[in-house]
Length: 262
Image (cartoon, rainbow, N blue to C red):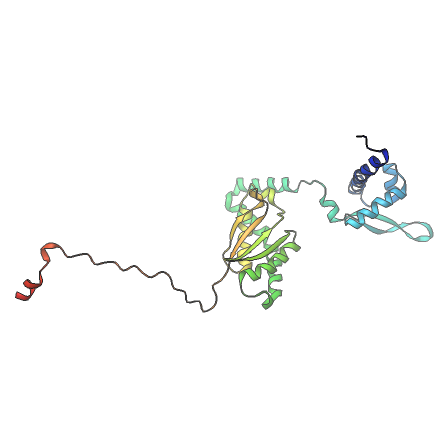
């Protein structure tokens, strides 16, 4: 079956747009802030076509418009320059993970596992403080159960880029992190996951158990948060088993008649 030329052109248009926008962001990454005219000259297309792509990139949050000082166009108006946002930069490959791995391998070689653990705890100290402030600000509205505090913690972690959520389960609560910024590094150095688990436990106020991690191939980092027993709970443990008294040795036994006659 032959696809009409007009339909084929329409179906390929989105792909072509995507490639052009990738080229636009690539130029902004390589050369910094540029005008639509400058980008059009580098791409070999019309300024109007570039502006259409720039409008889409701005709407997606990948590019932002800036008026740079000292750059003017007709009648003294500042020229419109376009720059990459943090979200736009995040779409490019980077060597941060490789740098972190190299640094931690050096630390492990010269200081051992405890030194790696110290680095992990230091790296998480700022995160813990910011999340702790968020939990404290929630105050009494968060409730006194660890699972209730986990709800507030999930919001704080989401703001930090972890895409976290919390839910109540029969045994307490569950905290899920759908993104891990250090998963590639933590796959080799589990001390990062261990330090993060300890931070979660301190923030929710109880010992928690990590059930799954993205670093180990699971789709989500999952942490179980046990609930506290209700106030006034007087549930007792199992009743002690009474040990039966062993029978006396045969040579010490006396019949009832012998005891009476004695």
